[in-house]
Amino acid sequence: MSSLTRPSRPKKGGLIFSSARQKRPRSVSPLSVPSKRIHLSPTPAVAPSLSTSTASTEAKIQTRILIISDTHGVSALPRPISQSRDPKIDVVLHCGDLSECGTLEEYKNTIELPKSIPAPLKFVIPGNHDLTLDQKFWESNCTEAGKKLHDEARAMWISPSCKEAGIKLLDEGTYDFVLNNGAKFRIYSSPYTTNSQGVREWGFGYESVEDRFNPEGEAISYGKLAGTAKSVLEGDMEVDVVMTHGPAKYRLDLSSSSESLGCPHLFRAMRRTRPKLHVFGHIHKAYGAEIVRWQEGREMPEDDDVDDGIKERRRIEGIVENGVRKIEVGKAEMGEETVFVNAALMGRNEELENAPWLVHVELSRA
Image 1: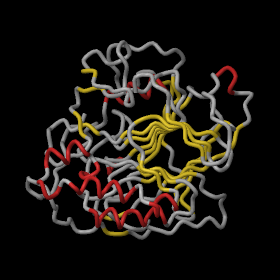
Image 2 (image 1 turned 90 degrees about the vertical axis):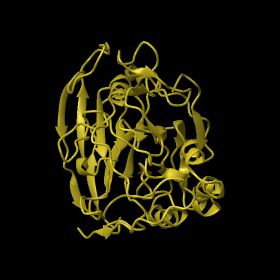
Image 3 (image 1 turned 30 degrees about the vertical axis):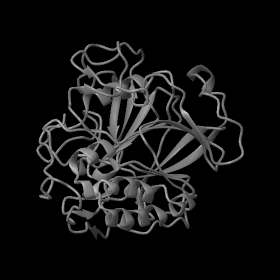
């Protein structure tokens, strides 16, 4: 597969600290509110997902989800996506690190990438490199002259041209959509990633002890509850896709030195809620996919180990063709299986070397 080189690191405008290259940490380790409902066609409001006992009788719609992450300012995929021999893509997910350090020029380049993908809807979240999109971080770390960059950066991603291209920048929270193929689609998104060593140039960061994702009584015993009404994943919501920038602990999160860098609190949330898909990036070396079949019963111990709650897990290689790596998810009921996908396209040589994942999954009809 051909590769595209990451742009050279630009000079940062407006920061009060050094623009030296960011070092990755060696160890990185929503309260119940109505979700946001957005409809892409004149379809009645989406009702909450049916329980597992009734879901098996629902009509299902085959849905194709393209997943990418960690493109770091590159404006095109390693290979153009051809749909001449494959059904159309229904939705694209970009899991963050849109840029190297959050400059407007980088975002301008990156926006061209989802625009080039033939799909009606493209969801995007930032990552830890997208400094200007994190309002709290940016206002605390920029000069007076640079404060306007947050508003300008966000304006680029919600501009009329992005809207026309189907690009939607998602904040942290849970959303309901009706896709153009008639499927109902519930997605939880969060750009936040653990920053356990306090790296200064790190957007959307939190300490590894902080638990943003679990409610009181269902968290790991040593976690410090730090969730908000939008960040906590409730177990009864039946989310189709969880999209985060960083991985859950033990799931496609190994560094080049074989350290598990994912978030243990996010793994607990995945174990509790069991979405169909959990998609992310952040750890470039851990690009890949695996399927986890969960054990019956949902008792939560005080802590989670690598295989706790898991009946079976296996890696999925997929088939590379037409510029994507394609996998098909089986017909398991909600809560039985979760497919984990690390979609970091950036390879070891700072080039886009990895293929996007195209996941075929069945969703309920709206």
